[in-house]
Amino acid sequence: MNFSFEVTPEFVKQLKKIAKKHPSIKNDILTLKAEIIKNPNLGIDLGSGFRKIRLKIKSKTKGKSGGARVVTLNVVENEDFRKIVFVTIWDKSDVESVSVEILKTLLL
Figure 1 (spheres, helix red, strand yellow):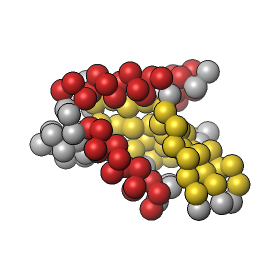
Figure 2 (cartoon, rainbow, N blue to C red):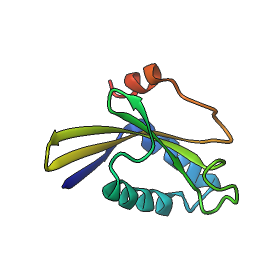
Figure 3 (cartoon, rainbow, N blue to C red):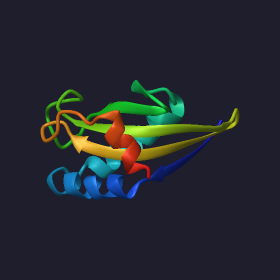
Figure 4 (cartoon, rainbow, N blue to C red):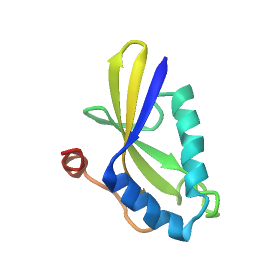
């Protein structure tokens, strides 16, 4: 199966914000991409193709539970191709949760 990865402007904005405090986050995202290729259904299904993935930030010492949350949108183009859109990311210590309605507005 082939994969295409895209990011939303909101994801880029939040990633830059987190990277100021945690410089390892960019490498952590690359690791996450490799994990998604191995298991496209990684994380919790939020419905409508959205998935919430717990991400460990290496420069933090709290593990996945205190790390970041990444929301992706999985779009199956056909049985051989899947597009993964990184919708948003947040540091768990800064934001508790994001509703599905907010996620849908980020894609508009």
